[in-house]
Length: 191
Length: 434
Image 1 (cartoon, each protein chain N blue to C red):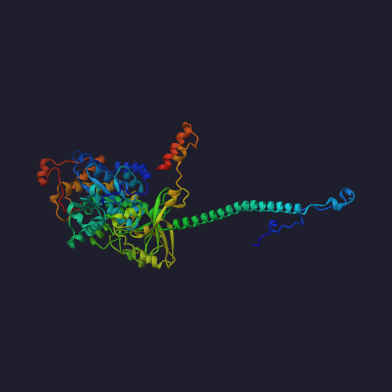
Image 2 (image 1 turned 45 degrees about the horizontal axis):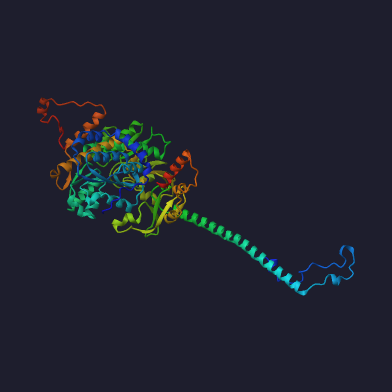
C-alpha cells in the first residue's frame, strides 16, 4: 500500500515562520516598511524552535493516537482470526467420529486411532489407568458449550466465569427475589 | 483396582425420566415383584457380588433392583451398547448402582465397561455372573482367570451365549457351573414366541409407516418359536404368510396351521415382506434379492446378525439411500428396490426399547431364581452347562398367572396318586415339549 506522506514529516524551514508582509496595510502606504519589519535574527530562530517543538509534539500525539487505533486493528484482526480458527476447530470436532449423542455442558475426550480416525469418547485417560492407559492416542479434552461450539477443557478452566464470586463481590443487585435468582443461577453454574 | 468409579453414564440428568419408565416397567413385570415379596425376608443373595452384562434398559433395571432387594451387590454393564437406554442407566446410577453403560460405546469402551464390573469395593472380586451373550463369562475365562476361584456360577439367557459356554466346555476351559436359561420353556415358548413377535409390527412400520399390512404377502424364513409368534401376529393383520423351512417337523407344523410352505427361491418371487427367524447364516442371498418385488421389506428377527446377506446388497446395489437411521433402500441392477431394516442386524435387539416388559419378566425371573439357587445350593451344580428343573419354570409361570387374574386348579390327593405326581409339582418331565 502506498504510504501517504504526512506534512509533519517534511523538513521544517524558517520560510514560513513569520507572517507575510503587506507594504500597504489597510490601504495605507507605509513610510518606512523596512523599519516596521525590522527584527532581531535570534527571534526568528526562537520562533522556529517553538514551531519545531510543537511539530514534534503533534507528531508524537498523532502517532500515539494512531498507535491505539493500530493496536485495536491488530486486536480485532487477532480476534477475527481466533473466531475463524475456533469455528474451524469446532467444525473439525463436530465431524470427529462419535457413537453417542453429545450433550452441551459435558466434557468429552478426543482420541486418534492408528487408522488416523479421530473419535470422541466418554472415557478420560485416567479412566483407562487400570488397563495401563487408553488404547489409542489421546488428543485432548473438549467441552461442548451451550452454543454447540467447543472449548478445550484447559481454556474452560481458565475462563471459568463464576457467578458466586461476582455475587460475593456485591456487584449484583441484592434484595430477596434477586438474591434467590442469583442463588438459583449460582447453583446451576456450580453443578 | 482400589479406586472404583461409582458409575459411568451419558447424562445423570435423565434419571427422573428413567425412574418414571422403570416404575411403568415394574408394574408389568409380576414375576420380579412376586419374587421380591416372597424372598425379601430371607435375603437369600446376601454377600453375593453379581456382575451383570445385560442390555441396559428399564426392564433390566427392574431385574437389578430385584437382585439388590434380595441382598446382593450388583455391578452392571451393557451387553449391546446400541440398545442402551441412557435414562435407565441414569436412574440406576442416581440410586447408587455401579452401572457402566451409554448408548454407542465403541468396541474398546464396551470391554472397558465390562471390566469395571469385575471388582467390587474393597477389592473384592465378583462371585456370580449374570450374562447375556457370553462376553463377560468369556472375558473372565480368558483375561482374568484369577477371579475364577471365587466364582460360584453364571446364568446365561441367549442361544449365542450358551453356544459360547459349550465351546468353552468342549475346550476344557469352562471353570464354573453355568445355567442355561435360553432353552428354558419360559424363554423359548414365551419370551421368544410372544415377546419378540410383538416387536415385528413396529419394525415393519418403521420401514414404511404408510404400508398397509392387510393383503400383503410375508415370507417367514424359519418356523421355530420366533417364527411361530411372528406368523400369529401377522395373520391377525390379514397378511398372507409363506413359510420356508429345512426341518420337516417345523414345516409340517406350518402346513397344518394352513400356511403355504415352499423354498426361498419360489417364495422370493411372491413376497412383499421378508422376515428371517432361523439362527442360520445367509438365508436370504443375492439370487433371492433379484427375484423380489419392488420395495420389498427385509428384516431379521432371528438370532444371528448374518441371516441376511447384507454384504451382497452392499456390493451389488446400483444406488443406496438411507431413508431413516434404521432403514436403507438399495436399488438393484434390475431397477427394483429393497428396503433393509437395521442393517440386517437382529431387530429385537435394535428395538429393545419396546421389548414388552411382561415377556422380559419371564426370563428375568428365571435369572433371579437361578442366582438364588447357585448362591444357596452351590454344591448342587457342577462345572458344566446345567439347566434348571421344570419346578422353576412352573414357579415363575404361577407368579404371572396371578397377575393376569387367572385361577389355577389343584390336584386332589387321589389324582396326584393316580398320576404319580407331587401335588405341588413339578407336573411334567424334563423332556416334555409343551
